[in-house]
Amino acid sequence: MSEEQKRWQGYYRAVEGRPPRPTLLRALETFARESVAPGQAIDLGAGTGRDSLELLRRGWQVLAIDGQADALATLESKAPAGSRLETRACRFQDLDALPPCRLINASFSLPFCPPAAFPQLWRLIGDSLSPGGRFAGQLLGPGDDWAASGGVTSLDRQALDRLLSGWSVELCEEEESDSTTAKGVRKHWHLYHLVLRKP
Image (cartoon, rainbow, N blue to C red):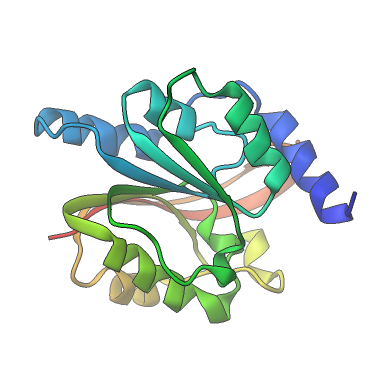
């Protein structure tokens, strides 16, 4: 097992049993208020299924994508019988297409897309969503401790505003705080919590 696999397994153990992310729940609640029936969703960086399992529980068809095949195997083992779940082990930088969908969820995962590959990934997200579809997830700001790490994507406010141009912004909450990671490591967070609607 590689060091990277060991790191991710430690993370998955640390978040086991935690509830779905608030950004995903907000997007789902908005669809429900609009009387939009569950459809196709994509969970980018699905891991062991913290958010995918909630989507399946609510009747969505889910394509779960993650770079760690072991995590997806765990998700498959947790999925209720008869769930409409498809998994794909793939790194973000290797994606060349995403299927049409109504919802894309990316909870704390997009910053791990290498900066050079991020513009293409964001284009794929926009192209995949149907009109009225939503993106829910997080991006990193430049003040985050991880922003200085090689291979991590972060955006200052001007870059974020450019990125969100053309979207209907339902939530853009900027957070700066000092706390710990899921594995108990102290760090400074600089996050953008996002729920976006494609016009």
